[in-house]
Image 1 (cartoon, rainbow, N blue to C red):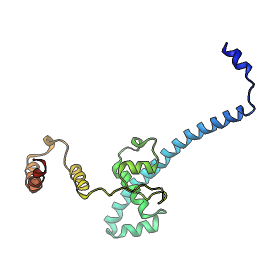
Image 2: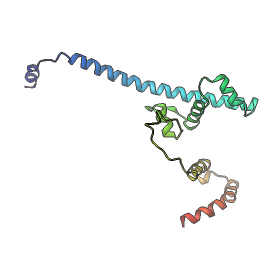
Image 3: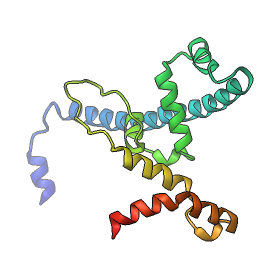
Image 4: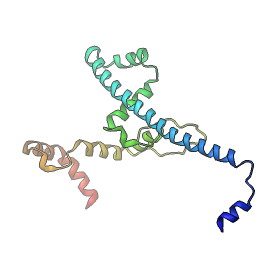
Amino acid sequence: MSNEVQSSFPRPTSADEINRLHAESEKSRVESHAMLHVALEAAWKAGQLLLAEKRTVRRTMGPGAWILWLERYFAGTPRTAQHYMRLASIVADVSFLQGMSLRQAYFSLGIATEPKSPARSAMLRPVPQHATLAVRLLALLPAKSNSISPEMQRAYRQDFRPLYERLRLLFE
């Protein structure tokens, strides 16, 4: 019955073109996703190389030479180099970011970027300083206390006692 109904409809002259455009759209979508990852992987690898080069430059020529090295040898801006290096230092395996654009990866990792257009950018409030400091402190501390030597435990207690006393007041 459905074959009879389908055969009774005249085939539109634009159907072939619609299907061709649909196939082209799907193919481009797949290629686009693949190219997003290629761009992200290239930025990540560039960040790894920049980090290594920065260590070498600082060790051999001093900390002030890094910006001079970037200006002379890096085709991008110093800000782009910072983004690449931050990406490489945060992400151990770039496949973790599969399917994201570079901008999406930066956003999800908290790497600040300039908005595409000031008129369309959302107003984001700056992260409070105490939140930033808390995240940095947590990153420095080992996740498991049993992996800390007794000497380090005593040092942590001594160093963090004033902080603990002030924070304890907030939680009691």
